[in-house]
Image (tube, rainbow, N blue to C red; front, side):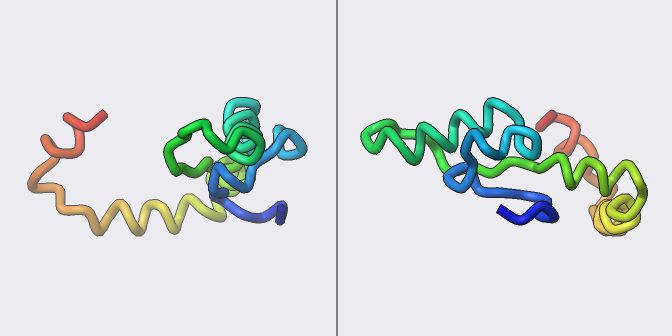
Length: 82
């Protein structure tokens, strides 16, 4: 797996990726890959690379630009989903 990806599908994760995706996502990926009858919903994980990029500022600007585009007239919708 590339070290620069910000999100990774769960089915691509495995125990070799624990440092980038965490133990739970790695375990889910292993289950998806190795237990065919187990029903695990599709999903993705935000990698530690994304966190690092956000904290250092390289991703922060892009995220803030996207957030600025959200309509603020209906904040109740956003806050009730938290």
